[in-house]
Image (cartoon, rainbow, N blue to C red; front, side, top):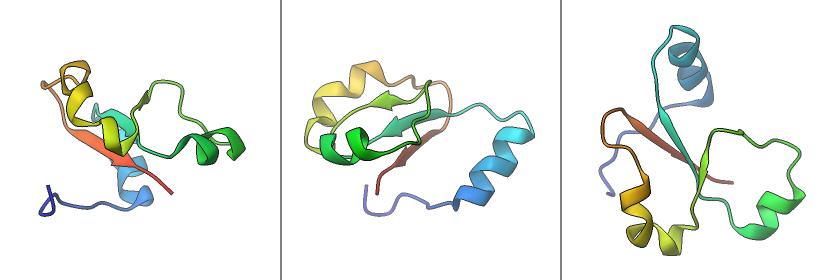
Length: 69
């Protein structure tokens, strides 16, 4: 996974505005999640340490974008 491509927030927004469908994975730790005033409702919350166990929850029919702080 170290070779996964990276995109900027601006690039993601541009692509979403163009109609591209993504699965968003919020990998922020619980403290960062609780303190944030920005939460994407459709994002799947998964702690990085639990990512492998949650792979079945992640759709495989569209690109996946993981984000953290």
